Image (cartoon, rainbow, N blue to C red; front, side, top):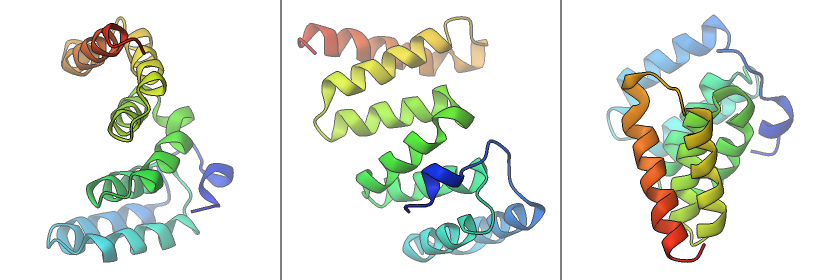
Amino acid sequence: MPFVSKRTECRGGHASGFASFASLRKGLWRRGRKEEALRTFESTLQYDPGWFMLWNVAQLASELGRLDHAERAYRALWRCAGPPAYLQLARILERTGRPAEAREAYQFVVYAWRNADRELQPMVEEARRAVARLSRAGH
């Protein structure tokens, strides 16, 4: 995934990208063929470097336990996806034993969404609890 951080664009992607996503969603991903779906999304990124394709690469990589892969994708998404990408990144950092970095990412979510809509408050509260938990642990 070396091209991701340099070429990711803060736009949804081309119509062909959305069509590819829809067919994958109904097909490969839902049928549990996640490895194949991940390869397909990654190959689509070469032609459609929008955040929408990269978000799906990040989700699939995370579901497959490829946390280093997912981390790179979420880091590339920070400009476009902001707090949602940081929340996912924080979870990965915590799972991979980097609590201080995770706490910083959670703090960003809390700050960025300090006045967020009610629908987002469960994610803000998750981030607040994580900051408190990691702070108590000395991170």
